[in-house]
Amino acid sequence: MKLPVIGIVLPCYNEAEMLPLTTSQINTLIEDLVARNIISSNSFAVFVDDGSKDATWPIIAQKAAEYNYVKGLRLSCNVGHQKALLAGLNTFMDEADALISIDADLQDDIAVIEEMVVKFKAGTDVVYGIRKERTTDTFFKRNTALLFYKLMKQMRVNIMYNHADYRLCSKRVLKALAEYGEVNLFLRGIIPTIGFRSGAVYYDRLERAAGESKYPFRKMAAFAWNGVTSFSNYPLKLVTIIGFVIFFICLLLSGYVIFAYSLGHVVPGWVSTVLPMYFLGGIQLFCLGIMGEYIGKIYLEVKKRPRYFIDERVD
Image 1 (cartoon, rainbow, N blue to C red):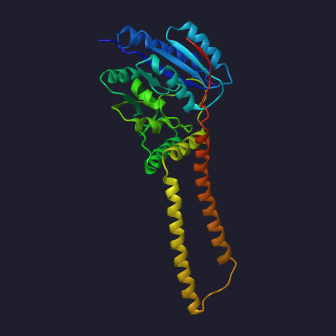
Image 2 (spheres, rainbow, N blue to C red):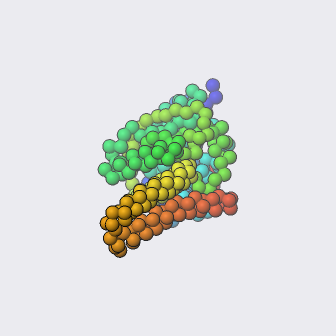
């Protein structure tokens, strides 16, 4: 039986501190899988430099020359994690039978990659890496992450619970993914919509060995909001619901005012005039903000600008 060619795609942004360890561990993993005849000797790992400002690219180039299975791809500028990952997937999808995406910090356990490959060889097109639990997270991060997944489900977004971007995709899934031309990328939502046979492996998330996280709360919140607005029109429906609720409240208040007037209990005052104005004004601004977010996304999509440019490649 022909052994599959497996590629591992690792987006990097300012990961100079982590890369020496990551490249060594990934190269050793591939060597081991090749030696045990689990994957083809043509398998590889590609590190995608997303416009880093530190020594990330020189280290990638050095390790590509030093290790047998390491390659490098350098983007012309920083385009963000999702687009950098897509650049690696699109560039190398014709050079492998399946590609595995994983972050360069190796907090996602690479020990389950062998299990991913086994499931792929058994006919599974998409294998999701899913965390078993979140006991290693801080209280704040754990609860905000749980809130994120609940929010996604509430907004009707098809997303795997406790799954980030650690997954294996077969070549036909990658070919289908390449047909998605949207600029506002949210791969965690796109991949499940493609379909095909899927499975999962479960692992415990590890501590970062070096460097700092490139996803502070601000970026995570922006990422979550992009996921909601890219895959659900539920917020627009929410605007309609808010409008009906306010209309109903206004009817009740009107009835109360008429009733109070008939009893002679109406007391003219500043609060009864100004507070409803502030309330309605705030609701209007909130609704306009949601609609503006969707209009902004439409503006970006219709321009159809390229999502990334490749500056250099090393094998």
